[in-house]
Image 1 (cartoon, helix red, strand yellow):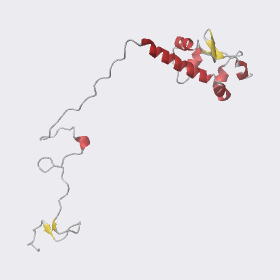
Image 2 (cartoon, helix red, strand yellow; image 1 turned 135 degrees about the vertical axis):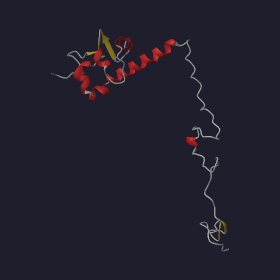
Image 3 (cartoon, rainbow, N blue to C red; image 1 turned 60 degrees about the horizontal axis):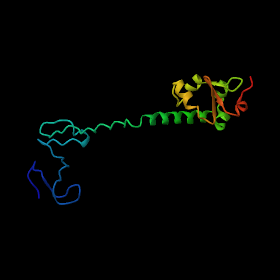
Image 4 (spheres, helix red, strand yellow; image 1 turned 90 degrees about the horizontal axis):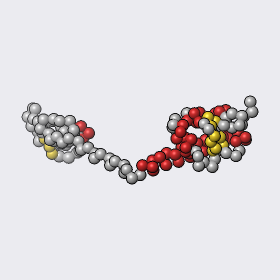
Length: 156
């Protein structure tokens, strides 16, 4: 159908190859012909839109007061495990830095160990955590590998 000049709205074929009115682009609704913003912008207030404040997560429950020693036991176990790894045969075989820190009897200062990664600088906690260790022996403020410490000395 041919119309007069300027008449639009009906075309014989449009982009999809169908007969009928020209399809309109998708419209997300809204007011006054404006498109609704994408969902990630839905918290911004616009006139005519309903606004709901964001839902907050409820606060986390507080830890039970009946298990205060559990945290300390876990921390001391983790410290002992990490230091026992530092003094293990596998680690000492390739850890030149730790071997250079040893004195002539294999002792390393607890302050030196406290500066290593994954450890605390609480010297007292480190010393307490190593008391039951079968791998590391402690004397005063020093520690060394129990039994085979002499194998890891670097002759100077």
